Structures are given as structure tokens and as C-alpha cells.
Image: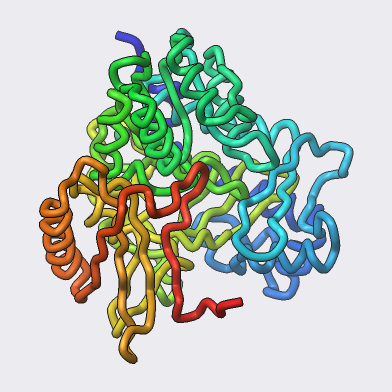
Length: 441
Ligand SMILES: [Zn+2]
């Protein structure tokens, strides 16, 4: 039987072997950052930490955190690259930008070896989904400075797959390519997968029946680890959908595997994960907290204890696939930046999606946090499927209001509008509006 692992030695390493590898890489990374990155030399000096003080994984706790705001401020103060850079500029091969909702995006630089690490770990994930050399792969991300397209393209090529380049193509052209060529694997954001399926359906095309897609993978948003969203994508393409959480600044750090057990494995040899509670103490198995990652391979911009703002839960069980890599339950459960408080109740948009998507007849939705009659309120706007009758729309409104009230622990207002009234998303979706803080202009 062919192996289900691209790198069994690493993916099935004993805890002792993995720890030894991590310690060796961590010590090298801290020494390198201290010696060559002005940003880290200053940061470590201010914290009174010398590289010799970091000898074990537990010693990492002495190292101060790094935040994205800090990196952005650093680049703004020392334009254009900031002074995190720890290699001569001539050794840099790639630049990618993080997608920013506010301010200038962060520019992230990589050496040739850094870039190989990024796409090779990504290739390990594709292999875990079942992608193999004979596959024809479409990475349907935009061709530009964002890492999504490039990493998906290079990762598939790293496995020896033929990659169909569609970065600059329109959705219509991509649908045409899916119908005309034997493309078996598709990568895109979950929102774009649904957008693509809807665009095809409008033309009377059934992608599940009329294409050869057998595997889809999704990054940029947590949708593929939300069971109802995953099911919707799988039905639309007649394929198996997988989640790939990642960060431009660290790595394509996680992947679901073909055991489909609801777990996301972490490339622990590329980035060392800590999961910390509100007081920054490590949580044990079953515990939830913020994911903090330390890069164990990147040399151009070697981030130490980077606060991802992603909330994850450490798995208490092992995955039936046999991988020993640390795993998280259900992928990224929420983003601390997206967390909202409504009448004292914490609400994550992902939780709303978990409750809305299982309902047939929901084509798109929007979450509005607003002040209504003097009280904080959540309005869920629904874009219904055109096939629903007026009576069915009313039934849907009532069922959604019930499910959301029970699931969130707070009463919400549900409005079912006209089909096609809400915006669609061809990259990362922006389904959340907070009118309580947004200033109209
Ligand atoms: Zn697994």
C-alpha cells in the first residue's frame, strides 16, 4: 500500500525525537535572530534574555511575545522592510504581503530556503489530503503579492503535479477550464468555492457532475473546518474538502488529514506551537487558548513567540491516521480580533456560520452587530435560495431564529431578504458589520 505520509519520519516521530529536533532548531533560531536581526537583538536585550538562556522548550517562556502591530509599526518606522530582517538583502528571494483590513499591509521577506520550507510543508498537507503526482491542480487564488496563490502553486508542483495557472483568470474562465481540462484538485478560499459553485449553477452547470474534481482544499478562512460549510462545498463539487490554516508570517502551519477526524495537525518541525490562556499560561490537552507560534525554519524574518490571535483547542485524542504531530480540535475556532461582546455574551462569527450553514436554502448571509432601541443586538441577514417559496422563507426565518438563540445563548433578529441581495465574496469574505463602532462617512 502506498504511504499516506509524505515524510513519515517526521509525521510519525516519537515525542522524544520531535522534542530533540525542536530544541535544536529553536536554539539555532534564537541565536540567529539575536545575532542578525536588529529588531530581536534589541527586544531580547530589553527583556534581559541571552541566547544561552534558551536551552529547552520551556525556556521559550522567557522570550517576549511578538505581535503583528509591532511588526507593522516597525516597518512604518523603518520603511519599507523594517529591521526584523536577519539576512543580507541580496539573499532574499521572495516578498509576500499579508492581507490588511486597515493600514499598509505587512511585507514579509523570505530567502530561497525559507520559501522552500513554506511550500514544502504545504506540500506535506496536500499529500495528506490524498493529492498525488498524477493530479492536475488548480490554485484559484489571485495572482498578486499575497502568498495564497504562490504557496498553493509551488506546493502542488513540489509533489510533481501539473498545475493549471489561473491566478489572473476570471470566474467564468475558471469554470470553463474546469469543464475543459481534467482538473482533479482545486484550492481556494471557502467563500470562493461557494461563489464559484453558485456562478456555475446560474449557468446551468453542475460542477459535481461535469468536472473531475475529487479533492478541494481551503485556506484564508476557517470554513472547511465548519462541518456544514464543508458539507456544502463537498456537495457542490462532488469532492472531499480539506482545511489548511496558515499565516504568511509563520507557515501554512496546519492541515486536516485523510482520516477526516475533525482534527488539524500542526507542522511542529517548522513552527513550535504554544496554546496560552488569558493569563498567558500554557493550557493542557482539551484546553482552549490563543495560538502562539515560533518559526523554526525561517531565516530572513525569524519570528519568535508570534501571537496569531487565533483561538484553538488542543486535542485530547490521537488521530486515527497515525500521525504523532500535535493536533487541534476543529481547526481555528475563532479570531480574537473578530470576537464581539453583545449584552455580556461573547460571540464569534464562526459560531454564527456553524449555526446558519446547516439550513438548506441559505445562499449567503451577513452578520450585523448594531444598537437597536438602545440595546446591543445581532441582526442576521439571509440571502435565500431562489427556489424557496414565500412560506418556506418564513419557516426558515423562524427555524434560524430558534437555532441561533439556543446556539449563541442570546436572542437575535433574523431577516430573510430577496435572493441575490447580499454581496458575494471571491476572496476572503467580509460578512461581519459592526455598526456600533463603525463611524458613518
Ligand atoms: Zn490525522
